[in-house]
Length: 130
Image 1: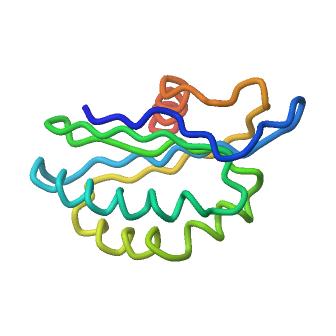
Image 2: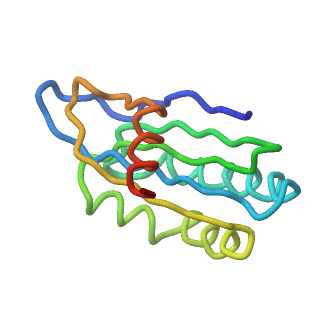
């Protein structure tokens, strides 16, 4: 598994609420791993300048074909501005034919729970599937 540990981009304000999002994908095949990795690197460049980003982490399985991004944002509008612009928007178009399943899970998170844990995001994802 390739993992990028939590990267912080802004100070977490105590007793504040934020928006957490997990984007979880399953690729159609193993070989799309390299294409995903190249696109992910480009999106990371956009993340460095994204307004309202508190932080993020990423993970991607090679043989298991699953991966995702776990991020925290100041609010929904900051997340949407990022999601619909630049490299992220272009990458989503390129990813579409390579993806078997794609889930987005959003929840409110308190400052004391930043950074969120992957286990929590995956548990939330599974509860949506049932």
